[in-house]
Image (cartoon, rainbow, N blue to C red; front, side, top):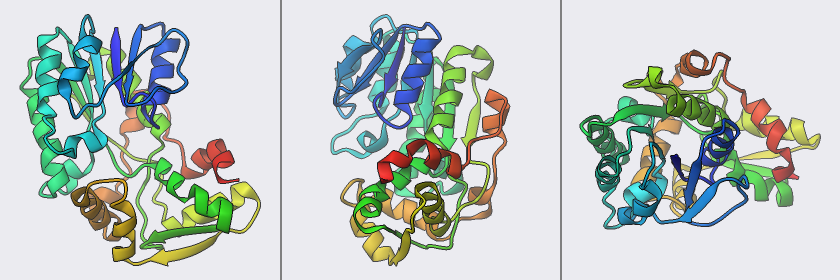
Length: 279
């Protein structure tokens, strides 16, 4: 049995689907229940309380660990999840980390994730670390303004990074969970091209067949908006990257193709599959 945390999100949902289609028994863990394959067991849990995973991990052979905001929650003890997995007999963990662990190692949110990576390496379990850059699905934050105002508002409009499709992350994660040849690997996951926020707005407009206006936010405006959803230190770390990506953050990684045998999907492909959200 494989446990998938964050199972109703942009990565966890397609990963859960892929594992179920591969014939694996899957326990999907999330705060809230959502539509899942009929054969998938669901468990509601908040990963800020690691003990909530005890029932899910009983009898599990592998764990996909996506912490997101739980890594930074007050009183969170995320390394306890690693210890709990090991003591429950889990043999393999695939951790969704962050590209910034390598490219911005001193950022506060990156230090916390590095601690998780180190705990996993020392756990005695088989492990794989996935380090994606920016997600194509972050564009969902613009869906309402596109629908109601025909506008995308974002900072640093002409500064790009190679955003990755969460479906590609899920496909890589599935391969790493099912194939022990990936044990001990650290994979950096990016899209196939650097794309700016202004170009993303143009891609959304092309998919819709109607104009979308781009409005550039100041860093302060963007931080205030991001702080509604993520911890302040994570907002600052993210803004540091998207305002002035360094050469490592602009690099197109070969790792998606190395693992799944095809080039990563483009942002245009992501928009084409999700255009209904912007109508």
